[in-house]
Amino acid sequence: MNPDVLRRALGLASFFTLGVAFIASGCGPSSENRYYCDDTGCFSCDGYGCTTVTAAAPVACSGQAGCPSGTVCTEGGCLKNCVTSNDCERGTICKNSFCTAPTGTPPGDTKECTSKADCTGGKICVESTCQACGGASGPCPCSTNAECASDQVCSNGQCVNPCQNDSGCGAGSQCKSGFCQVKPPSTTCTNDNQCSGDTPKCLAGKCQKPCSDDATCGEGNYCNQGACAPDTRPKTICTTQDKSACKETQSCVDGFCKYPCQKDNDCQIIDARIGSCGVDKVCRAPAEAKPQCTSQQDCPSGQSCVDNSCK
Image (tube, rainbow, N blue to C red; front, top):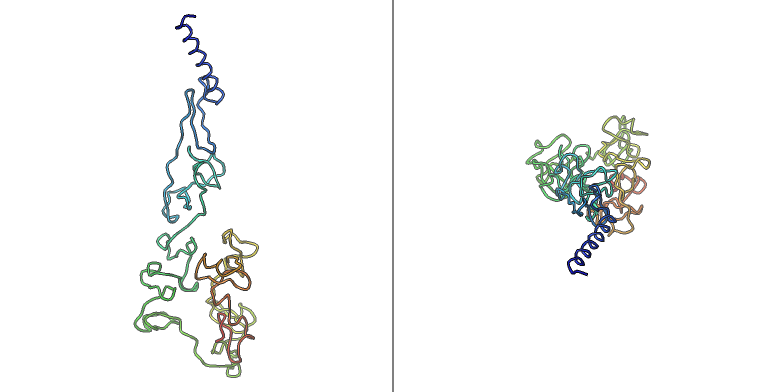
């Protein structure tokens, strides 16, 4: 056979063979444009081949305030929520309810904040969530002055107001060691026999009104072991029926989200402030995990159980 004729024949055969391969893969000359994603990435195909579709890298974030509208701050950056991959831009798929690259790592946990700078309205960052503190909620926890309000400093793990004398502090507080601190109750009694009239109960060294429930004590107070006392307890945020305020790794215990544990080390790797595993197998502050008392009966005569300590 003529060599030129043979070469043309072989070339035509190669073309048809290649064409069959294109058609088999969905990208033959007669195919329409097609977009798809698999474990190796996202691709756009036409009659001549396929090209990789790559989405822009997510915006890095330390908290929700740093993300564009319509996205959520995660450990993987600012990502869009999704139900199916149809909700996502090209180059991404719906993975763990977030639009992310097929070959990328899972988005990880969402984080509202990393530091106080990510929060607004006087809130601080506690366990990646902006939380209110101060006033009836108690002092803001802190490790540095930067985590406190501009007029406060961090002392012994709490944000406090510096002062020179008592006049620089609010009602019920006193200036001690340069900081405003809550005044201890006046020591007017050591037992109920020293009290009378409307305040016949001795609680923490002070004669108080008797009570059987919180309602009898009035706003701002609660019934503490039969006597009315100022209610400085943190407000409950969850119930065993509604744990929506808690993380998936937390349980609702006595109205608060707690981390379950088996030993102290389980708690210390979460937060040193709750670094003790209590008898109820949840992470607690040392005073809660190993309390001096839990009721009046645990204390000597003349003392009351206040904040897990006999006073």
